Length: 158
Image (cartoon, rainbow, N blue to C red; front, side, top):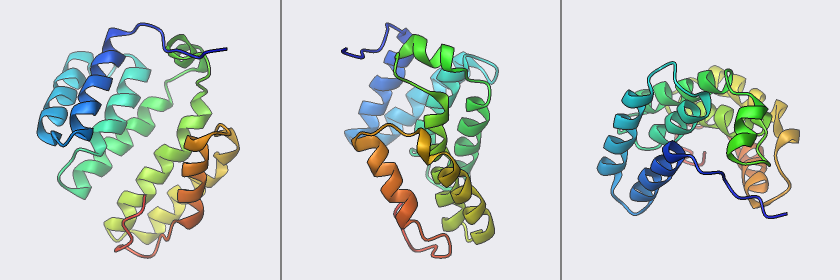
């Protein structure tokens, strides 16, 4: 079965903005995603909020701002159901989002010098590893969690 995303104009716009960021146009990407966040609102569709916040975190100029967006992504995922996620892509499972979201929080806290909070979020990532798919993405997250050093603020690996 070929698992293709369903048509969702908001997810398409998110993807287009993410591509801007990946092509080096960080400010344009951040502006596009921020405008989309403002459109959707803090109580909008949970998949949209989680995805937006997750990608917006990576486009911030400070660790504090990145942390705030990572926290928003985790908060949004708590309102996301498998049913909603599968309407976008049939293979998506909400629990599979959690290792990456917790790992991002752990990374922010590590870089901010909050080793105890980094360890706490690392434990959250480890707790949900079994939900990751058996593919390159799942393996990349498993490796990042395994290699994560919560006490080393100079370690730039997520």
